[in-house]
Every structure is written in structure tokens, then in C-alpha cells.
Length: 249
Image 1 (cartoon, rainbow, N blue to C red):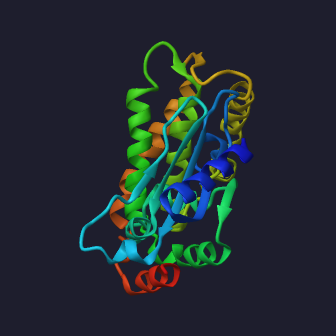
Image 2 (cartoon, rainbow, N blue to C red):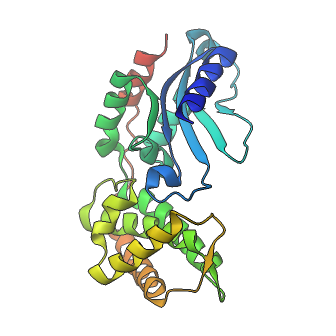
């Protein structure tokens, strides 16, 4: 699959006349809890040639390849990515931390990663993860049976929230790093769920686990109270403008 993904990225560069400066895995495979039938969620950042940026008209700033059961590949143009980076965009900050990288300009990614602490907004990122956790809890973790994977789709964002609330720093993307915040009894439950998820499909259903429901609810309440004390985003554009100009041309 890695070969197929890299070939797709090469075809993107050829077809659209762009340079892919970074590409990584963004879904459950990068988070650390894939199922056997999990697809590959590839996200990338690309740069056009200089003429693209000299047009008087705004142009399309995303590239999306047709989605199938196995591959979901799409990317953002550099200027779009930097505008979202300036807003402390949660998904983008995750892409930059992915343990699975398919392509990268080393200097570019070093430059961007070095700026992450300066543009990280605890408040904005907390809202992002809180919304994710609450949506899963209220929409997916209800009824007599629930999809196993949805526990991870609630636990990962709420642990990211707790990381922000307590440490005031960019939370790691990987669930394995976030779960250090779990108590031993919950970690044992999570270990069992991970073993199951590794051998069942994405639609596998289980009975609700009250301990996890209680934990997720209490963490949402804790993190909601912490939001007012968090700092907002750094809106400085000069540094990002310089970075943009460095890689366009």
C-alpha cells in the first residue's frame, strides 16, 4: 500500500503540476487503533509554481482524489494550509505529528514543526476536541449496543483535551501517548478493546462499557470548565508569510 500511495502522490504532482512538500497518514492507522479493514487516510500539503500565485483570481486550493474502500487521499495548497496553521487547526497539527509519513521536504517540515508551539491555541484546539468527543458520546455511544471503534473516537479527543487543560501544550496525535493519562483500571479495559479491534471489522458491535462512559462524561465536564482559562490563537502573519515565500518559486 505504501508503494501505491507514493505512486498516487507522484501522479498528483504530474497531473496538477505541483510539488508535494508533505504527506502523511491521518486516520486510525496513525492514531494507533486500526481494524483489519481500516482504509488509508492520506493527507498532503502541496505547492504550485509561482505563476499560480500571481493570478488576480482565487483558484481551487484543495486536491481530492476519488475515494474508494481502501484509499482516501486529499491535500491542501500551501497558502490554505498556512492560514489554517495560523488558526491552530487541529487536524493539520495532527498531520504534522503523524508517525506514518509518505513524503516530505525535510527543511519545510522542520520549519513548520518549530512554529507549532508559537501558533498553538489551547482554547481553539480544546474546542475542536471537545466537539469531537461530545458528538461521539451523544450520537454513537448510545443504545443497547455500540460500535467498538467509537470508544476510541471519543477517548482520543477527550484525552487530548485533558492534555491541553493540564499541560498547556500541543497534544500528541497517537492514542498510545495520550493513554498515559488513563488510570490502570481503564487501561486494562482499553487493552482488551485494542486486542478485539485488531481482529474485527469497523462495524463490530459490543455492549456499552459503563466505566468508559462515566470517564468520558466526567472528562468532558472537567475540560469544559477549563476552557475559559485557556489562551487563544497567535494571529501573527509575518513569520508565516516569510515561510510561504521561501517555498514558492
